[in-house]
Length: 282
Image (cartoon, rainbow, N blue to C red; front, side):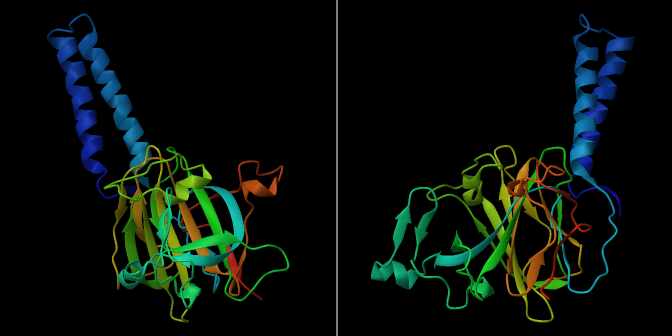
């Protein structure tokens, strides 16, 4: 149902009532040199901003078979073909000492998962050069969400949530929080979700916090079955969402900022649940 997302009603109503009450008090009792009415106006403006931020409109969901819809509203930053070159280490790997450390991204094993397309843990990816493609490659598409975009995230396909994990910066309880439009933001605090459909295809969606957005709120959990376009969580304020799909199964159907398309200088604007991001590979 269209309206406000989960958790939005209280802050909207509280700021609105504070604003109305302040204006009434300032008008009928004592304005305190106009400070009380001014405070009331600011509260109502804050309430209007919160309404815009928490809005959760209904969306028409495409019915074409096999397509993947956008998990987020925003502009497409880039679309890249990548290959896994490492993975997060297990306890056994730490014991053996076969672990690499990176100041920005943390600890890695210099070997991808045995089946990278199962996304069993967070993996390290590198861009694939033209002519060096393989069946284990993925296509990553990144979406930048500004503070003015709808921040409710939706499932790209009808699927079951197979895995979900929360990660933060190395040695931090929370963070880091780099600007979402920067490349380094992919290692900000994030929630990685793996979706598995009835045909055995998996995709990975990562909700990434930004410099302002510091709260990722999942509404679903492991084992939950979702329809295409169903809401599964949100990120509060500006942020970023990355989606990785098997390159052998899907073809990107949108334009990114890196393509330098005059019609989409910031990348194509996409809407969660409505815009088709990927079509089945022919």
